[in-house]
Length: 336
Ligand code: ACO
Image (cartoon, rainbow, N blue to C red; front, side, top):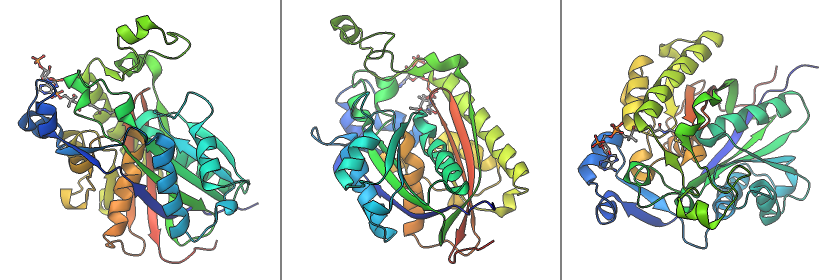
């Protein structure tokens, strides 16, 4: 059987209303707008309301994506939720969203690949659709990182924000035709960026709370910074080679949004001028699995894409995990 084509037929995002600026952090920890902006590019980030959960944000993005794709919840065969800040350890946030949107005919599961979650989810969706197993998949990335951030730790608290994105991925276009998707992982340095409390190794206890183990920790930001550049540069080169593309073929570069300095190094490496690099971290900070979906939404809203424009996507996150993908903008469905 011939492989099915795979399209992102709609891409939507949702960010909570609450804004936290760099100036707000100046009142909380020993930091400054100048430090945060010059070291990361971030000016502000969105923070979910206390009663707004990861599944609530994911549901908002999912309903928008369904509407944009002109699909009903019942058309969906599988819901995938990429998150490192789920509502609960179990049941999966995907099951909670399935119930909230009324997708009664779908299967549902979460994907845990931290900031690379969107690309890991895309590769799973692609495999199911390409094989003909499913026709319509709802991929959701949603993060309430404010729930696991230590607001006394200046090394991490200024970096992250909350938000969600969702895509309807189908076997019929038009939309963004999904090309190569490559993934990688290296668990040997997992302790550099992790949350140690609450799982089976350190079950929640008064002690784990006292030791602040239920917060995200980054023990060596510079090592993460260097590995992020190295792995995303390798992933980008590998995918260009595999897809037989050069820098000239990249219409837009849509990278994971962790640090503007990381993005600038990669843009230079791939010879993409910054006006063709999508950056949203100035407004939203690092929303982990959600960053690429939010950035894609911003790019699509600009309505600048032309037929056959190619987008290079790169991500890197805790694990470590990384991934790369190529998407091609198609106004018409492509039949083989
Ligand atoms: N305000 C002021 N000073 C600060 C702050 C802050 N918010 N945070 C750290 N500093 C200080 C440090 O304590 C250090 O001080 P010292 O020299 O007295 O020890 C100094 O600033 C320099 O710290 P560095 O860590 O060397 O700063 P660097 O330039 O590396 O920037 C940063 C830090 C922004 C965290 C950077 O390392 C980074 O972006 N790392 C990568 C993050 C990333 O890519 N994450 C991706 C995955 S995220 C995920 O999967 C969830």
